[in-house]
Image (tube, rainbow, N blue to C red; front, side, top):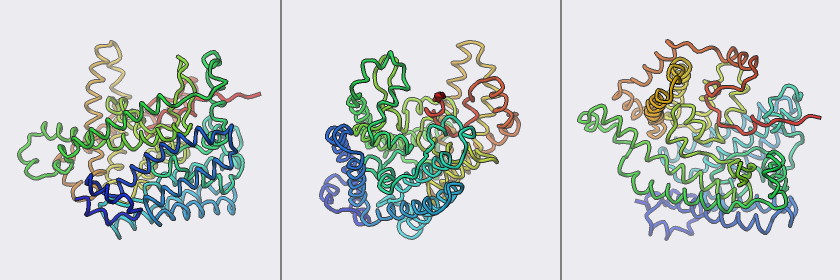
Length: 506
């Protein structure tokens, strides 16, 4: 019953009558209403607080105050954690030297987030998502640490030591407190993100985002667009349509295929293995639309405010995918574990790549999965998922390196390979993320025991039996040949548009 969770909401009770009428928890109602109000506010922000009509100071102040208001409405005084976390790390940036600020900020921001997550899970409401103020803190943690690393790159490292993407993202001055709070807590991303680079956000506030992207794109394509800002209207409408479909699918089918049935004793005893495989796929498939809804709506809000422009397509139409967090078709038709990860929670994948995978000298794949598990929270199921993910990643990489070349001789063979790898990828993803949904150790291990740990055993055998060259040797070969990195060299990286930038030198 919704009334059972209404009392656990720490935010405003203004919408409690609506919560009781539609039988949904009050915290969820508050979240959706705030996001819809943020969408309308974003349109007003773009039209009436356009950079040509007002100063960056006003835009920063309005974006920040609205963000705090939405946070207070949804989470009550728990929203003060956003200020405390941001304030502590801003002090670290001022007081510590640029040589080590990125390390201190990573430890403090992630530690503060972890303390809040552990307290919420084990002290207050284990297994409940009501009043989950740590969700926004996860995005703020990404922003804090990203900015710290970008400042370290821009102020403590030499230009020739940076990769092209690090050169683009490097921040070369200390942001003001207002800029810092606006970046972390603006109304477009305070509730559901997504994270973004500091340079992109400041360019948006100051009205430089359109000009820089237009210069990055072919001038012949952009000729008709240079005088006017591109309109996000079509993309916002399309994304809202995706939100509506995702919400409808989730509400209509999520209860038909409950994930918990995968560990039901009667179901395990009476259902043949192929039936369990099919049900596993369907039950995990129906959990994804809620993420599609939340992330696509968040993207639409940013676009409605004018943030997210990423140049033009070849036909001259504007692209609004700068901070998009997912590509649904690429997820559902992924033919490799990495392809799925590259298109799921894209901005988090970029963050993991930039602060961990690119910089970790030892076993970056394992380190990246471990950081991801710590960032997600204190539930044991998260760690089971990400430990399993390490094995699946290594096995998938070994398979692709050793098996895929044999299927590239003809289109028919390639099609067969794609079909097989699609089915294998989808089942591997479902098998991996079951503990992420079940949360606890006992149910997760019960599921894996019912499958005789076949996924773990198969992945371990493949990873050990099939040879894959070490990362530094593959990277050396690629640099010697002048080619870009292959898809298998970066297991947790999205299609990072910064990596493809050709920096101009004079």
